[in-house]
Image 1 (cartoon, rainbow, N blue to C red):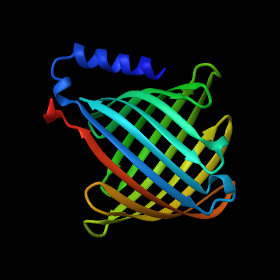
Image 2: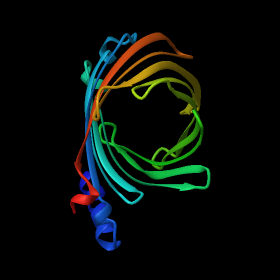
Image 3: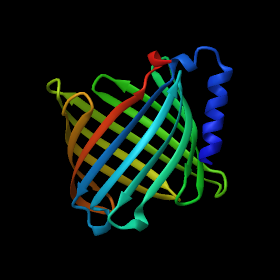
Length: 208
């Protein structure tokens, strides 16, 4: 599946004039600590790499947890565009651990410090479609600090749930950031989390 995604992305770049010139490759690493009820989910380390060209993108991500049964890896391919006030993103995601493929579509409406996103993920093999609606707020209080809050309503496998989060993000330079948050949900007690992330541009469009 990873090879197939990379081949498709390569063909699109080579067949479309100007895309190769816009190619950018980015990567990142992340560490997370939480107080979740499940001890195996309290420590996380992960990484990702993504190539973007025009509005298209292809990437690979991996997250390792304290409990290896929770480890997750995904390969994905998609295209994003803005149509008026709506940001449209469509693609294909392959869950490499669960051997599952989903067809994804999201519609987002940013409005100042607020944003709304509707996301659909269809599993052709299972014949099911998961849906989520996220209402988010992000308020910059300085160049480095942003306050955040969000509510996500999910419907997965016919079951409904809701998740809340409030927190703050602080940039630690050009390529790293620190986020702290309090989260809770309809089926979870409140828990605290801290994420440290690094992002780097491996290849920019100007380098080609």
